[in-house]
Amino acid sequence: MEQTLSIIKPDAVERGLVEEIKNIFIKNNLKIVNEKKLHINKDEAAEFYKVHQSKPFYEQLCNYLSSGPIFVMVLEGENAILENRKIMGATNPKDAIEGTIRKLYGISIDKNSVHGSDSVENAKKEIKFFF
Ligand code: CDP
Ligand code: MG
Image 1 (tube, rainbow, N blue to C red):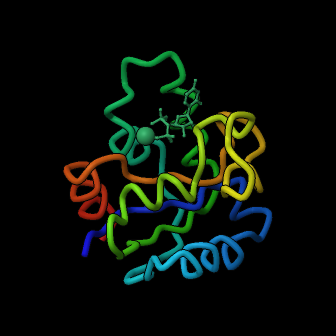
Image 2 (cartoon, rainbow, N blue to C red):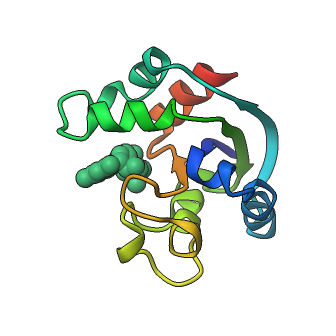
Protein backbone atom coordinates (compact mmCIF):
# COMPACT_ATOMS: atom_id res chain seq x y z
CA MET A 1 0.00 0.00 0.00
CA GLU A 2 1.24 3.43 -0.92
CA GLN A 3 0.30 6.84 0.46
CA THR A 4 0.17 10.20 -1.29
CA LEU A 5 -0.77 13.75 -0.36
CA SER A 6 -3.72 15.44 -2.00
CA ILE A 7 -4.75 19.07 -1.58
CA ILE A 8 -8.07 20.54 -2.64
CA LYS A 9 -6.94 24.06 -3.52
CA PRO A 10 -8.72 27.32 -2.54
CA ASP A 11 -10.73 27.65 -5.78
CA ALA A 12 -12.40 24.26 -5.24
CA VAL A 13 -12.91 24.63 -1.48
CA GLU A 14 -14.51 28.01 -2.11
CA ARG A 15 -16.93 26.47 -4.63
CA GLY A 16 -18.01 23.77 -2.15
CA LEU A 17 -16.42 20.90 -4.09
CA VAL A 18 -14.74 19.07 -1.20
CA GLU A 19 -17.31 16.28 -0.85
CA GLU A 20 -17.56 15.73 -4.62
CA ILE A 21 -13.80 15.47 -4.99
CA LYS A 22 -13.48 13.16 -1.96
CA ASN A 23 -16.09 10.88 -3.53
CA ILE A 24 -14.06 10.67 -6.73
CA PHE A 25 -11.06 9.39 -4.75
CA ILE A 26 -13.19 6.89 -2.82
CA LYS A 27 -14.84 5.59 -6.01
CA ASN A 28 -11.37 5.06 -7.47
CA ASN A 29 -10.24 2.90 -4.53
CA LEU A 30 -8.18 5.55 -2.79
CA LYS A 31 -8.91 5.52 0.93
CA ILE A 32 -8.78 8.83 2.83
CA VAL A 33 -6.77 7.94 5.93
CA ASN A 34 -6.23 11.46 7.24
CA GLU A 35 -7.78 14.81 6.40
CA LYS A 36 -8.00 18.39 7.59
CA LYS A 37 -9.11 21.81 6.45
CA LEU A 38 -6.72 24.68 7.13
CA HIS A 39 -5.59 28.07 5.87
CA ILE A 40 -1.82 28.31 5.44
CA ASN A 41 0.12 31.58 5.29
CA LYS A 42 2.39 32.67 2.46
CA ASP A 43 5.59 31.53 4.19
CA GLU A 44 4.14 28.05 4.64
CA ALA A 45 3.03 27.95 0.99
CA ALA A 46 6.54 29.05 -0.05
CA GLU A 47 8.02 26.21 2.00
CA PHE A 48 5.58 23.65 0.59
CA TYR A 49 6.26 24.69 -3.03
CA LYS A 50 10.02 25.25 -2.52
CA VAL A 51 10.77 22.86 -5.39
CA HIS A 52 9.31 25.53 -7.72
CA GLN A 53 11.21 28.49 -6.27
CA SER A 54 13.09 29.23 -9.49
CA LYS A 55 9.95 29.15 -11.66
CA PRO A 56 8.37 32.38 -12.95
CA PHE A 57 5.01 31.38 -11.44
CA TYR A 58 6.36 30.70 -7.91
CA GLU A 59 5.29 33.99 -6.30
CA GLN A 60 1.80 33.79 -7.74
CA LEU A 61 1.53 30.13 -6.77
CA CYS A 62 2.40 30.86 -3.13
CA ASN A 63 -0.01 33.80 -3.00
CA TYR A 64 -2.71 31.58 -4.41
CA LEU A 65 -2.28 28.55 -2.13
CA SER A 66 -2.40 30.88 0.88
CA SER A 67 -5.38 32.89 -0.42
CA GLY A 68 -8.06 30.81 1.32
CA PRO A 69 -8.80 27.53 3.10
CA ILE A 70 -7.47 24.30 1.61
CA PHE A 71 -8.50 20.69 2.32
CA VAL A 72 -5.57 18.31 2.76
CA MET A 73 -5.79 14.51 2.64
CA VAL A 74 -3.57 11.46 2.86
CA LEU A 75 -4.78 8.98 0.24
CA GLU A 76 -3.88 5.31 0.52
CA GLY A 77 -4.11 2.55 -2.05
CA GLU A 78 -2.21 0.47 -4.55
CA ASN A 79 0.01 2.77 -6.63
CA ALA A 80 -1.72 5.68 -4.88
CA ILE A 81 0.75 8.29 -6.18
CA LEU A 82 0.30 7.45 -9.85
CA GLU A 83 -3.41 6.66 -9.49
CA ASN A 84 -4.03 10.05 -7.89
CA ARG A 85 -2.10 11.80 -10.67
CA LYS A 86 -4.30 10.00 -13.25
CA ILE A 87 -7.50 10.93 -11.44
CA MET A 88 -6.33 14.57 -11.15
CA GLY A 89 -5.52 15.00 -14.84
CA ALA A 90 -3.02 17.29 -16.57
CA THR A 91 -1.71 20.43 -14.84
CA ASN A 92 -3.53 22.64 -17.34
CA PRO A 93 -7.28 21.83 -17.21
CA LYS A 94 -7.39 22.55 -20.97
CA ASP A 95 -5.16 19.50 -21.55
CA ALA A 96 -6.85 17.24 -18.98
CA ILE A 97 -8.82 14.26 -20.27
CA GLU A 98 -12.58 13.79 -19.73
CA GLY A 99 -13.59 12.66 -16.28
CA THR A 100 -10.46 13.88 -14.48
CA ILE A 101 -10.84 16.29 -11.56
CA ARG A 102 -9.02 19.09 -13.35
CA LYS A 103 -11.16 18.62 -16.48
CA LEU A 104 -14.33 18.61 -14.38
CA TYR A 105 -13.51 21.47 -12.02
CA GLY A 106 -10.27 23.25 -12.98
CA ILE A 107 -10.62 26.90 -13.95
CA SER A 108 -7.12 27.63 -15.29
CA ILE A 109 -3.52 26.38 -15.03
CA ASP A 110 -3.11 28.13 -11.67
CA LYS A 111 -6.62 27.50 -10.33
CA ASN A 112 -6.55 23.81 -11.19
CA SER A 113 -8.42 22.63 -8.07
CA VAL A 114 -6.06 19.93 -6.77
CA HIS A 115 -2.47 19.12 -5.90
CA GLY A 116 -1.01 15.61 -5.79
CA SER A 117 2.45 14.34 -4.86
CA ASP A 118 4.54 13.28 -7.85
CA SER A 119 6.97 10.73 -6.34
CA VAL A 120 7.46 8.45 -3.34
CA GLU A 121 10.04 10.84 -1.90
CA ASN A 122 7.84 13.92 -2.31
CA ALA A 123 4.76 12.11 -0.99
CA LYS A 124 6.65 11.31 2.23
CA LYS A 125 7.87 14.90 2.57
CA GLU A 126 4.46 16.41 1.81
CA ILE A 127 2.56 14.12 4.22
CA LYS A 128 5.05 15.04 6.94
CA PHE A 129 4.60 18.71 6.14
CA PHE A 130 0.89 18.63 6.93
CA PHE A 131 0.42 15.73 9.39
O1 CDP B 1 0.40 20.39 -9.92
P1 CDP B 1 1.26 19.68 -10.93
O2 CDP B 1 2.21 18.70 -10.30
O3 CDP B 1 0.44 19.06 -12.02
O4 CDP B 1 2.12 20.80 -11.66
P2 CDP B 1 3.54 21.45 -11.27
O5 CDP B 1 4.32 21.56 -12.52
O6 CDP B 1 4.17 20.71 -10.13
O7 CDP B 1 3.16 22.91 -10.82
C1 CDP B 1 2.65 23.18 -9.53
C2 CDP B 1 1.48 24.11 -9.68
O8 CDP B 1 1.94 25.36 -10.16
C3 CDP B 1 0.41 23.70 -10.68
O9 CDP B 1 -0.54 22.80 -10.15
C4 CDP B 1 -0.22 25.02 -11.05
O10 CDP B 1 -1.21 25.39 -10.11
C5 CDP B 1 0.94 26.00 -10.93
N1 CDP B 1 1.48 26.37 -12.25
C6 CDP B 1 1.21 27.63 -12.77
O11 CDP B 1 0.52 28.41 -12.14
N2 CDP B 1 1.72 27.97 -14.01
C7 CDP B 1 2.47 27.12 -14.72
N3 CDP B 1 2.94 27.48 -15.92
C8 CDP B 1 2.75 25.84 -14.21
C9 CDP B 1 2.23 25.49 -12.97
MG1 MG C 1 3.80 19.01 -8.99
